[in-house]
Image (cartoon, rainbow, N blue to C red):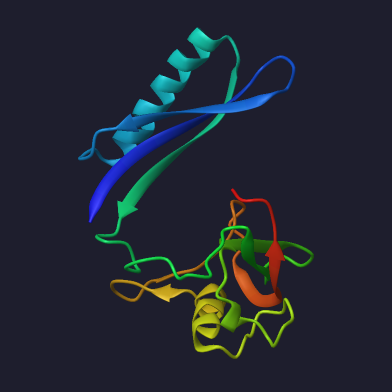
Length: 164
């Protein structure tokens, strides 16, 4: 499994137009070192760009040897997306997830409703609702950027969208 660490910087100009740039970080550094690098690099980017740097994120990319499937299925189409919406621990808020391409056998009949009884769908929904066990007694839970954890599925359907 190969690793690649990137830092994304979000920028805003005086017209409130947003953009971003990415800087790659060599592997082997601690998170605190990468954070210090990102803070220093953000200042350098802001000084050169003349705009406001509004945030940064550090991403560790993973490469799966050969992918998780040897090839895409014949009916795969990134414009057909699975849309899952979950209630979260804070009332009135939701998390949503779009999965590009959806196997048509995972819908109910000829509708756009995702078949929650399908074993693959049920496994993903369960992971979203209760988390995924990792090393030791810990469980990693799905949530959003406000640390609101998913609790229950509230919508599951297929959406037809522009390719992205």
